[in-house]
Image (tube, rainbow, N blue to C red):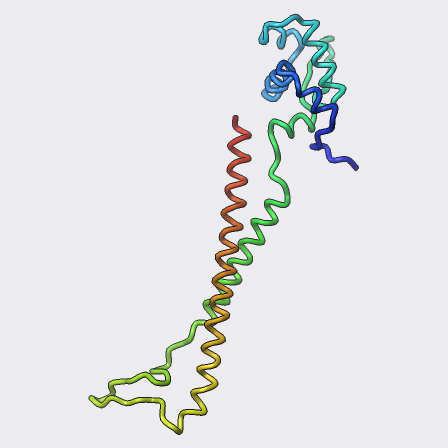
Amino acid sequence: MENAGAIDRKAIRSLASDTRVSMLKRLADRRRMPSELSKEMGIAPSTVVEHLKELESAGLVRKEKTRRKWIYYELTEKGENIFRPRIPFQFILSLAIGFVVMGVSLWNFSLLQPQSNGPAAGEMSRDSGVLQTFATAAEGPAIAPKAVADGASNDLSTVFLSLAALGLLIVLAMLYSIYEVMRNRRK
């Protein structure tokens, strides 16, 4: 199935005329009759009808007949997508992935932070006025695995912080893209 928002050669050819683009902009506001477009733009009604036929053959506008024999022209979905682009699903998905990556990374980072249960190896403590060093020969084998685990924890912390920063950048980029689409939609 063809994408309704895809622009083909015929649509591009019909958009080459400034008059037709101006008509599309007016039709983006609301549906209009050819006589209304003629008065607003200051061109002959027959010229307006010819331009509208070209836009209709490109699939950008459609003719709507009413019970009162009036003929209105309005934008099709393809024409709407030119002047009011939708926020693609990929943007929303990327935004959600960015939030998930950022959240999981920060959560893992908080889990990897060492819990302070007292002075670590090589640190000194002032206990009852006497300085004590906790890296004794008896504590040596018990301290080594903890030091290795702390080093691994620091490496993982860096990775998770980097992932959190990447997630934040993805979120900011997607929010900026959505802002630009919304800003262009208002013009």
